[in-house]
Image 1 (cartoon, rainbow, N blue to C red):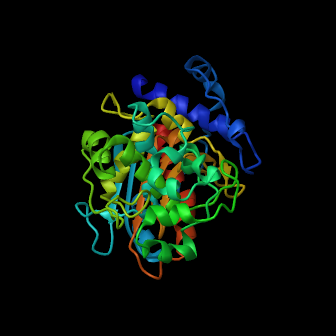
Image 2 (cartoon, rainbow, N blue to C red):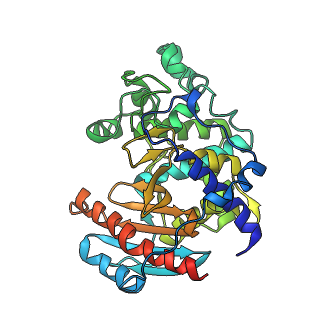
Length: 370
């Protein structure tokens, strides 16, 4: 194993283990977020983080397992990399390697990377910066100290306190003439910095803030600082009525490029020797801040869960669009699903179960012999 790649990877694994110590997924408040350890402390605590590679050899080959995924629902791609090498690339139902796919809310996790880059480059001051300064035209007409003091960090963790524009409210929001004003008009139904309220309106505000701070469109910012250095081809991406790209939804990427995003996370922000986003930001972004359930937690727009005993970081979009990173196995798993009424929660659960029960054991065995 390459030592240059292993050292940052090990630091991420240890911090994942550290962050999972909290067994109660109830909301962390901002003053409870764990402090980052320094590198020396991280590297000297690695002895407790080795995975258990003693599982029985899987009965079926990985090719057979992934081929059978088509029988469970509307999946149209599965791409798996391990140790930087492609293990599986399979397409279904007319999908192919050159087509981009709408990754839905998996876009939110990419937005997290963009915010980290904006902070690294000085476009944003940090996660404690308040949103009021970015929307003076709105707040001059609608002064509200509670809303104005919402921070960038609150938006990153879905803790703005604003009523959601997702779910049953999504249609009314996207049909409105001004998506920013509609999102800011929502009443405070939770305490900013404390209560998690999932909302694409929240991440759209974050994308608009990034665009205003950088002086360029969100698409141009993403291409300049993230996608072009990685050789990623960005496909379609929705615009709001004011000309802002939709922060956190409806971005289109090729599955192979989704893998690159996963690999960037696995390499703790580094790509071909260039640090595109700081290690500190990548590590901070995957430490749980809020908890959805006892099994699933949420950091800076990245989800966290256990997968067959391994720590898993993942981006997740409606209909089952996934970028899954498993640091202990040095693996990235990408799945995309075509939009249709059959893409139900039942299908999503079957897909997740297949990854946990059928795919992970194969990657575990490959790790044992590499």
